[in-house]
Image (cartoon, rainbow, N blue to C red; front, side, top):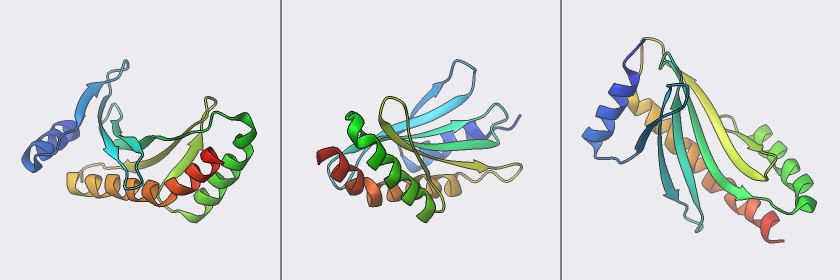
Length: 140
């Protein structure tokens, strides 16, 4: 097992960046933080390290809540368009109507916390770009 969680923790401390650290029920580690969007909403950014600490999932949660069942089809159509057009993030709609995005990275012996942080920012930028489209559906 590698030390990628420790390396990332140290990186955050050196850069004076706050992210809450936690452990999942299966013993894997995660980091998360709430982030305000330019358009007024807020999302949760999260990094999930697998058991080997070599595969890291980047998540953006709480992008939108589509509680109206009649808007589900429009939301799924938008998600399909976004997933077709964007390279890095995959957007999903869960059964409760919550929209989130995810992206997976793999580091074997080459973990670089700067690269991971840039990918996290890229995921946030993708959400910033599409957030108004989701809000248009939610508020219609």
